[in-house]
Length: 257
Ligand code: MG
Image (cartoon, helix red, strand yellow):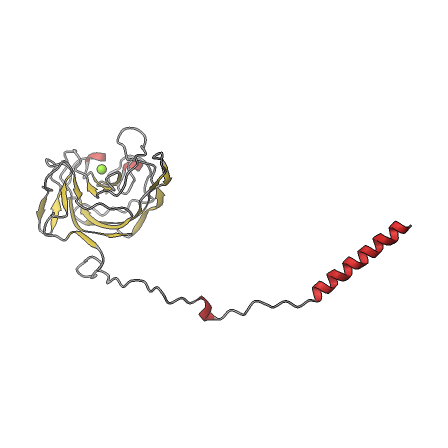
């Protein structure tokens, strides 16, 4: 009986304390005002966009080809870049091998325009084949895929043999194609594996082909991608050995990210 009375008393005391706590007034959070979430500094740097008529580069871009010469490039095999510059463009020379930028890059925004000649011949991978290698490692495929089918993970805008693009946005031979690439360089673990994969977003003629795709490794013709530890690297353009007529490039610029 005594234990029952004590228990009842404890319950009454607890209930009393709880009720008192509920009545206690605490300060309320201060009401939000618009200015509390409006930050003025730092201001983004001013970048003057390219001229829409002349298709020029933004003011903070590194121009890699302005129509006059290949001084920003060299032959991958050594020596000067020997592809032909003419009429404000340059054309692959199939006897001279790949070319690459003298400068090395990590993460970047890259703009590059390319054209398959109107008189192109060949089929499949043997028709206007070239490519843009990011950091000298990862090929974004260039191919004439206008009415020309091939394996889908090797067509225009694929990361070669890793992923098919989300669309085929080819312009026909004789018209200029535009690649706008946003690339994030990888981060490596000590043991040479990826801590963070390289990623790429690719827009082709205004159409999204790759949406933040995580690159799996090198883009091999034969075999699986390999993970090879690397630092900054060049932008490399491919001289493909197929016998079709060579493609041309113009208006290349890059912004480091
Ligand atoms: Mg290629």
